[in-house]
Image (cartoon, rainbow, N blue to C red; front, top):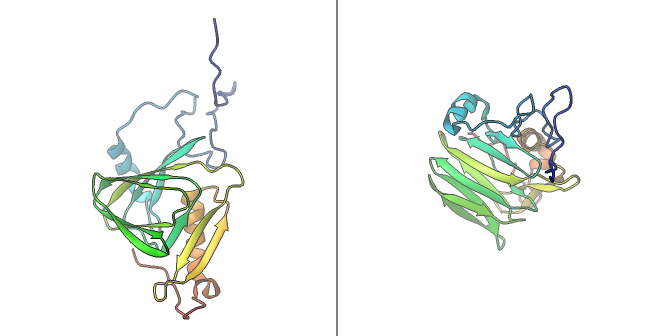
Length: 206
């Protein structure tokens, strides 16, 4: 009789939960502490329990962070004026309220209105910036980054549309590291001042 080999390291003899993504070892990954598979749960009940953790500037919280992909629930309002570019797709499902996702296409900014109940797919290497209003709720699925893969956090001048800053980095934990990078940009005049027109990009209000 053949044996099915697990694709994830099984629980240790001590009963520890398997780690599927070493960059986010404490986030939900489908396994319970005893190594059993997490049972189905009600999404909106989970949101209610975790809504206080979805704070600007991004408002994201891991629903699941695994070996191949991760799922985030994102509550508005957010406070973003950056664009994100990564070498993989992103899938958006808008659960509550309407949002705008700005993209850079052909050198110009395009507004995509994603309404409640709609889905939106962002192809690889398309700079995008979700703008989420108060009391909105969305689900986003992204691929887990391979070790050493970099992504971009970009800021464009709202006055002259010049690229002001393009941070290329290996973002291990998008919930913690992406927001931290934004705060560092807004706090540094040397980074956040447009060299073309002198406009200073500041932290937006939620």
